[in-house]
Amino acid sequence: MSTTHTLKSGHLDVGDGHQIYYEHWGNPSGIPVLFLHGGPGLGCSDHDKVFFDPEKYQVLFFDQ
Image: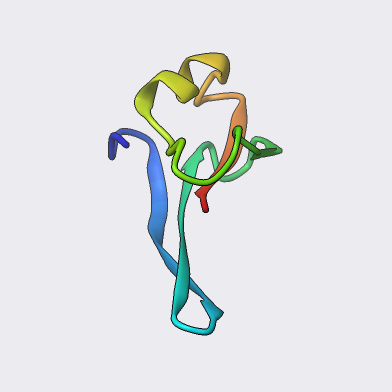
C-alpha cells in the first residue's frame, strides 16, 4: 500500500507465529473506519483507499 497519508503501519503479532499486516491511514482526527476485506490472501491495495477521503477519514486497513 502507498505511504501517502500513512500514519503508521506494521505487523501485529497474533500468536502461534502468525502476524497480521495493518496500516493506519488518513486524518488522525477524522471519522474512524475499520476496513474489512474479503479474506486471507486477498490483500490490501491502494485501490481500497479510493473509497475514503484522506482528509475526512482515518482508516485502519488490515490483511490476514
